[in-house]
Image (cartoon, rainbow, N blue to C red; front, top):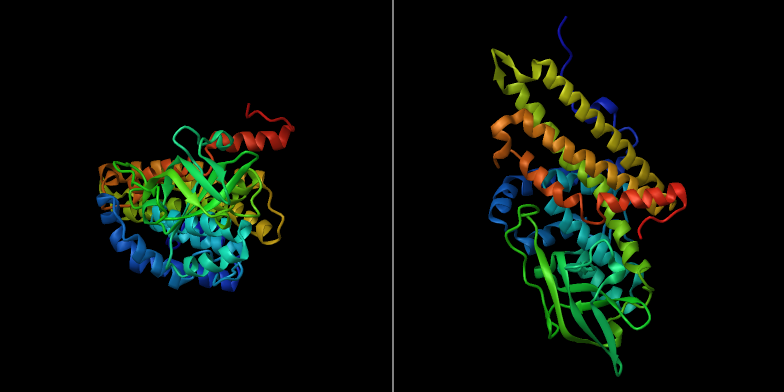
Length: 392
């Protein structure tokens, strides 16, 4: 009896079934854009560690994905699930491309949308949604990543102005940004500030010699007596809850995005093993190969179910931070395991930029630790389970 035609991993699960028609259309539009416009170039961008960020921002703005899950101010106002599916397709191209969109929409734009004044929203959000202005998010510092409460960047009053001093590190989009959302200690609490890139005393040197996220702009932010008017402060951000609310938005996108990288690796491995002959038959015809492919497909399908469930909870306004931690911890951890296993199926070919697998694996090493390390998410989940904080 003839074997049935091969299926893709997510077809096994029928993953399209719970996805609405509009969400599917958005997903497919982003997938076509990635395949037609980004995929042909991304290996070269990665190798050269340089991307045309402003050109890409304009294209992504025209596509409607920048801040797409926000309402008003030129934003598309889609469901959270549609945003997640867009992140998945972008990261199937490259984690750096999803990071550009994620930092723009879920960190910089969301901070202004959630915590900004009406004047700040009107000034920045329409241009950022269109890709005419790029934003970044300055929270992490050279010595303080997982412990943002200990940040050293500070803002002090000088008359009606604020004066900021400090350094931020590992800031996506920093060197190409028009505005930076910078979080700083003040006398009474952490506050957020909008710092236009042309403000005297502000600079954003690019970080070089990266081995991961090379198709992405990563920078340091330096604030040397940066003077800002009172109107630069985000009025609705009170303490660390301000930046942490933004991080939850970005983590949600990663729950879906990591699956895109895993899916691209698995699709590549499936295609390669069908075509690669070993001892006069396809590599895909061997039991050990099929066992690897089956296990990886299982984890991809489980991750997709988890992501869609969290998306629906978010659309209902019922998603809790510890649930986002469950999604980020599981899906990134499994995605990087899939990438590493797929590399073994390609042998030596898997380490080249002719195939995307090693590029995805390297990128996922960064995704594993940014927006909360695996250990931080384990502690968030542990606190939810036990009622005890183990952070100190």
